[in-house]
Image (tube, rainbow, N blue to C red; front, side, top):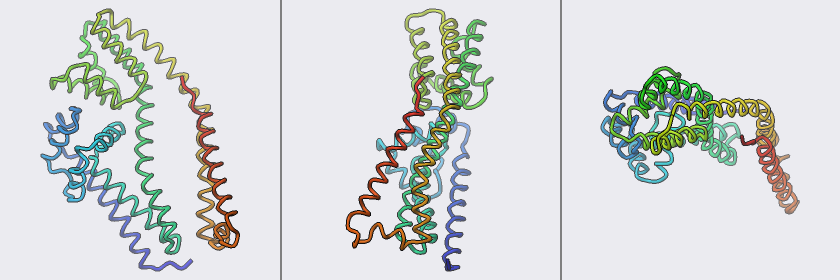
Amino acid sequence: MDVNPAVVLILGGGIALFLLIIGIAVSLTSEKSMVEERLGKYVEDQREADAIEAKRGGLENPFTDWLNKRVEKSSYGDRLSQRLGRADLKLKPGEYIFAVVASIALVALIGYVIGRQSILLAIVGGLAGAYLPNMYINSLTNKRLVKFNEQLADMLNLMVNGLRAGYSTMQAMEAVSKELPSPISDEFRRVVQEMQLGITMERALDNLLLRIPSDDLDLVITAINVQREVGGNLAEILDTISFTIRERVRIKGEIRVLTTQVMYSGRFLSMMPIFVILILYVLNRDYLMTYLDPNSGVCGYIALGVSAILIIAGYFAMKKLGDIEV
């Protein structure tokens, strides 16, 4: 396959430019003053956080600034900010949208070059590029949620010991933020500092549940809120919940080990026909285009449609088999 050297240079330059932009974005986003970090990181009101970010100028990129102004007051911007917070990505919605656009352009260009100036592969590459950032965020969110749930029982034991030693609930949470590793220490540090800024404990815990959508955490927060309403021995309540959560985490771990093979097999078997079609399209386009030959009528379209339906049905069937609720 003859590839124009100019196209290769353009592709390499595009990749280098994309990596440079991402590096600048991460570097500038991490540079915050102490006051801005305290306010912008721990207060959950998105508009107030965006106003604080605006004071430091944001990224020196007119495109991302324009995007932030468009999405900051929309429901989509709120949902996107919540997703980025759950993944612990220090990006604003406009910066994430800019990264998605860059990913679409880059992967589409790669598909266009590999497919020898094929518009179809460029479109497929653009769709894949739009999906990759979302897949990355979902992966980070799931890993963080699993790690948080595994640390939750240790957090409860530390809180129980602190309460029995005479600590208040807030002091026990502060001990958790200092003694335990990330991510649970980071999240409870945010809870403590939100309360120090004047937010009620109930709202701070609700904000925590928004960032970490865990059923086990919901049980703990409900127990704390009920104890604050009606009274009782919080240490004993949390001690009982700790045992329950430990057993749930153990059972979930065993189920995850048993079902991982099924989940990855379903994903691999579902993606393999797509990869085979793309490879055949690049290596032997005439052979693959016989499915779309007008002389064959609708038989080729029917075959492709039935294949797509069977692949999708098989994927969801295997996903359902591996999805076991505890």
